[in-house]
Image (cartoon, rainbow, N blue to C red; front, side, top):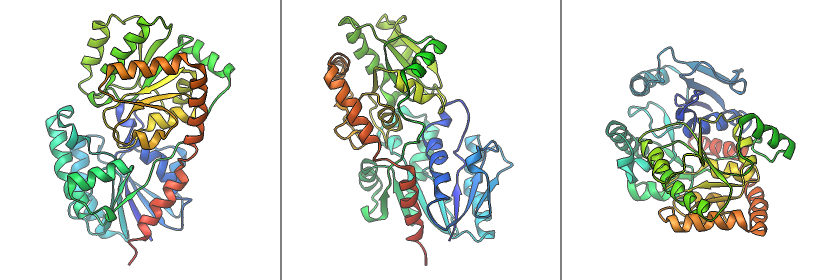
Length: 376
């Protein structure tokens, strides 16, 4: 079987474009090479691909000459040029890895849906982005032969909001890369010194946008400080959209000296930030999966996260789950995790065990099975 993969949302930029869907593509695609005997043609927009994407006889790269990093150009390529490319090729199945496939797709097709936040939280998107995703995602999942959801939560949303039959949807969880693992105290101390980090800090990593609910985290952290704890709050991640209020809340709560914004954190550096943290907090209002919570557990950090959407699926009983709209609940959970040493150690141990259940090679095997289900 010859599989085409639309990987034009893959980005290696130091911005929010390098997170989320791009992380999914970057992690999954190399493992597909090991998951079976399929041939692959990977359609890319970014020519600066890493070594794990190097082509061979069964893994071809087709890099567009168009600047598809620009959304308008990517959409035009996706809807008009990709169908022509497919019609001229011997591709059997097209896998569109980010919500949308060509509406006139000449081959059998699979679409991955990461979440439906644009339908559930429309006010957190600009109008054009919301309109495009709402319309084209609905049309794409209806026309696709199979749909991959990255959690049971996302599958339920697809059934409820897009009217898909549950049997059309395969739930395939993300994995976690091997670089996310505990490191020695010597390495952590050297990292702290190099980044001038405090000895004790609470960590958040994610794109700065309304859905991540960082404002509530800051308000809860203000209560942690009032309890006399010495910790600082580190909010890592690139600016996405509508992020101004986050900085306004820091000023409002008089936390300018206690909250740090290091900006975008590279994939290679993230494990060190997780390892150095006394606690990772992820109060997102809605996640299709929740990469950071899993990666924090894999590094041995205790995790407090939302009890909404997919995060309970990721954490299981390894972390503390709270109502993300409640400052009181979030502050109480943070204080418990930071002051109860026995609980803290139990969360670390359970988190490491939980993270081992998520594997990219298993995700690749299950994805290849979805392709094979479409063989004529």
